[in-house]
Image (tube, rainbow, N blue to C red; front, side, top):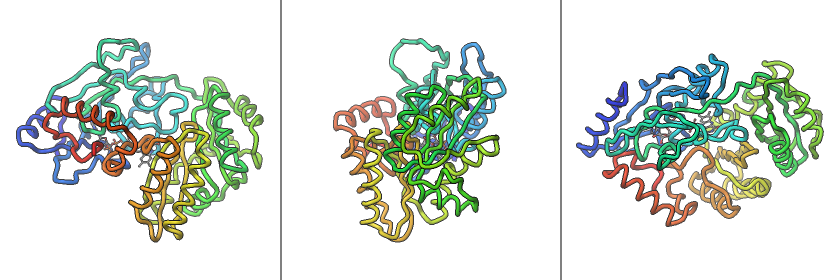
Length: 411
Ligand SMILES: Cc1cc2nc3c(=O)[nH]c(=O)nc-3n(C[C@H](O)[C@H](O)[C@H](O)COP(=O)(O)OP(=O)(O)OC[C@H]3O[C@@H](n4cnc5c(N)ncnc54)[C@H](O)[C@@H]3O)c2cc1C
């Protein structure tokens, strides 16, 4: 494991590894969910832990330059201290890093409002696989001077180079927050409601979907009681945020939704809000308490979500009848996290069945976690031969000896 302290040392590590034909795995917080940040065949781990500086917030330009190793929580705290916010948030915030989030094009809870990482990165500094330093950190909103290197490195999963810093867009801090949990009679009703909220509620920050079986498991895991609104076949957790209290707007939007089964649970305090969010964010740990979890992260067009859920449950029932299926996700983006755990689970068989359904429904086999090692064999089913040839050409150009994360992404 090498822990360079600055970009010059990163370049020296890449150059030395290249000279000795040794492969490198960049590692940030190691919270990635597709195995991309761990060495599989004796690669050098390049840890970004020491590249953790967060620069001064530029209030006028609404940007900040952050080192690759800065955690999301530190970045959020720096933004908050200057009265602004960062537009991406996710459950791994205390450990996930800026570099890892760029490299996976992380999405998270607020994509419906602010977009994923690619929409936040205005400038990038990186050492490419051939040792070249690229640095363009000015962070201008308008800058049409050639190829979009930040866009290219977003989602590159460490296969093209090591991201060392990024200039990130900041967003206004909306301090007035309203949060509600709403139960629906069916998946279809919840998805329709999610779509209506995305188009009709300007202050919408997040709209997450959960189900009765998952919530029951989470409640048992946490040892808490569920609010009545969450005892429904499908449940949305909705959050609006604005400069002025958005509670009335949220209440109006909720009142116009069809298919609700009970009074919504509305957070009256920060503690209430944390309790509602805990029910959503504890889904991964409740699943993990049951054993080794097969985790898939997929998107389908919004209208296909009910079909996806029905077919995934049927496929798991057929392949591993004693297994537990947990479905949850960011419904505004069409994103479902599929977790399968329990006796008789053959991960390859489950993956093949679920991803085949996703491809048939016109979806993506990776919504936000990336391809990594875990989904590499599936990439040719998800992208055309032409796309993959272009990926390979880019990889050859920027990493001619193939030393950057060679077991990841490309089949
Ligand atoms: C509880 C939990 C909740 C999560 N929720 C979400 C969510 O809502 N949305 C979401 O998108 N993800 C989520 N994730 C997944 C994960 O947090 C993200 O993928 C995150 O972006 C990974 O950041 P990291 O610093 O941990 O990267 P790592 O895991 O260290 O690395 C991930 C990949 O990026 C590469 N990489 C890391 N740093 C660099 C660098 N500086 N330069 C080049 N390549 C690099 C690695 O080689 C690897 O391929 C969650 C994970 C957990 C555990």
